[in-house]
Length: 174
Image (cartoon, rainbow, N blue to C red; front, side):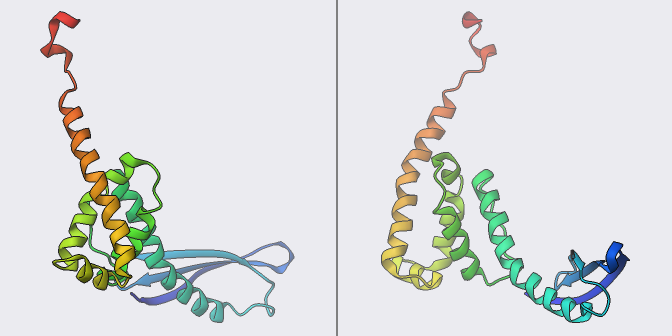
């Protein structure tokens, strides 16, 4: 989603004629995205053109950063959120791409609620879900298989967690 305003907040002159430029870019949600950099001397660098270029670059990075941040959060807590910088289906596909690279089975297991939510959003069957995500059905089937296999592991881990003792309940073991 778009950067709606950009401005140069401050210019600090440095030794040798170089300058530090401090920009601020505001997205459609009103969130500020600061960007700072060191430039060439005056006359050799057009900071106004750079401001426009940097706004485009920051706008292009917003969806990427959103996916990376949320994928990490899903592995930690499993709680889902609505994307702010891209369409839901694009977001779902990109987050799944990140999650499918996870090697830690416990972290991957935390992402199961996110996948189940995608199944609901995507449709009644694998073909509809693959179409929703914009991927070939054979690739969607690989993702679904991994999640279906982890489902059994999650159940086993939950059962095991229920067997953990609180020592107060078993005073003979103290």
